[in-house]
Length: 297
Image (cartoon, rainbow, N blue to C red; front, side):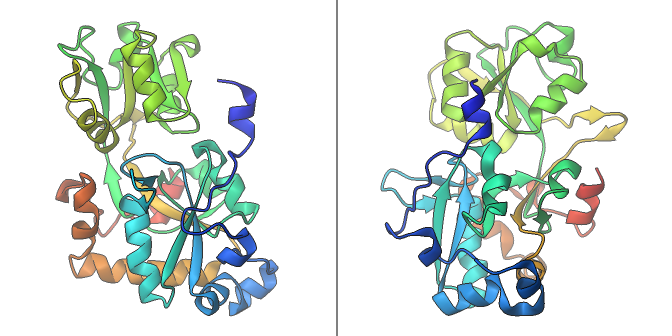
């Protein structure tokens, strides 16, 4: 993976209309104005539109064959922002590793990519409470020739592991003892699958949800997804909690989002929004699953 893929944003693509980002609802206010309630939320309401960043990773946020922005996060965004008086959601696609940088550079107003909440990311962005909590899995060749079933297996069995650039699984692999040379990074799921298919890696390490979706696109091609498992790093279970991220200055927008998300959870209305993308009741957050909890690590 070249440094340009790690360090620079992919050219932004507005999916709903070819208009400048400023016209698409990105904030240009200063932090003090945003804190006082005259920032991003108010501007988005006035414009009737808001811009979200996504990484084109199914089932979290991606474009379908017709070019429509969809996935669990964009569809949830449409529901919640409509409740907040914002009728239109537009998308800007960047590499996953560039999402937080793009958010803070005001290329978009929130990250709609099912991004895991981690202490490192919490230092740079304000995370909403999670919309899902997920376990890990491996995609392997049928028959699972290396017998990979849990987090410690790749290191113990000398497996080469494929992960997405900027995703937490790279840290999991390294922390469980996989040699750095055996951790291969890919820009997206499609390129990771090609790496597995070509034999450059022995497995892809992602969430069960991501891999189930990927497998559905390659049925009958000789691959399988293992049972879900929970990595344990330094004695702590590593559950992936996916959530929207906002700029730290946008406290009003974050609170408004969390309030509406809580109503969906309390009314059992969250799962029906996410279910078409492979989510189940097992992935629904519990009452103790908050952004503060996962920001602590």
